[in-house]
Image (cartoon, rainbow, N blue to C red; front, top):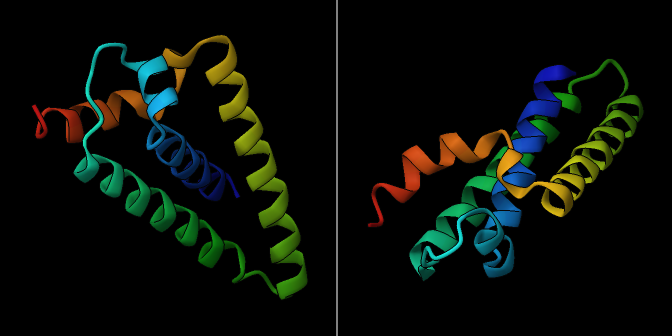
Length: 105
């Protein structure tokens, strides 16, 4: 379940960074291009889909879906709190910065 939480957290982080306002909170002065927006959304949704497929493999699908919604709720709440009180503290931001932003300069 920890792996699913980390993957969900990174997925929600990338989806939130695809919005101009949140992107500017984390990196003021940087430009968010349409290509970068698309890459952020695709990677975010792929990560959320990965966490979904990982949790549905539980012995009972109903237990897996229950865990999925719990993990997604907690991961989204953590992202919201971090964007509110310290946007640069998002864990996946440094990884994202090295991979994506260096290519789009």
